[in-house]
Length: 228
Image (cartoon, rainbow, N blue to C red; front, side, top):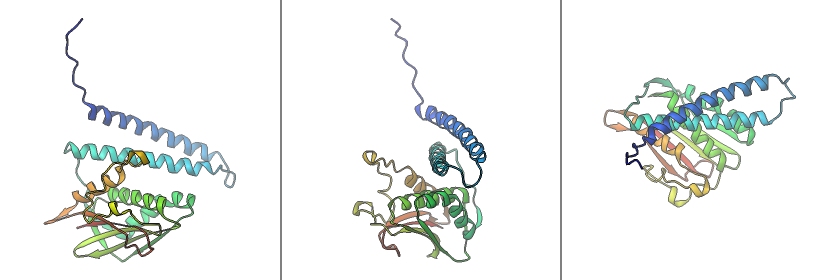
């Protein structure tokens, strides 16, 4: 019998490679679904297409979160910081979430002034879509996305009219938000991604951060993303 030692397995690299492969296959699947959907006339398209669109987008976002976090862990990731209009970011989130909101009969309200922020708008949009998605799961029928300027930070707030966060989920610094809850199907990936992306945004001695509370204008939970 050979005593040759088994070579070490670089599991993170294998996982990253597998995620790339899955993402490529998912891109092909989404293109095929689009072609199939276009073969139907308006008014006779099966409603399941909208659910398929939502689920494939959700899978694509999860894969993007994993790849981004992997690159950050290897110090191979850098933000694409530029000045962006808050209005453009909010409108992008509303456009991306329209299918999900319609499926759940949820109304997405928006409130914002003529503000600008320096950020990686693609990553911030992805993070906000994740937060709106989470709020939609626990709200009754309304979600509010608002943007304000507070103490030198641009603050994106996602609020809902649900029952609010449980006590153990309330956090002034986001430290508890990465905890896994596999029994209930909650990996915390989206929230951990949002927290990590927030912390990468810095300006002078200020660093981005997140907070959670139950002070929503709608009576439920509130998640705040602070960018310097």
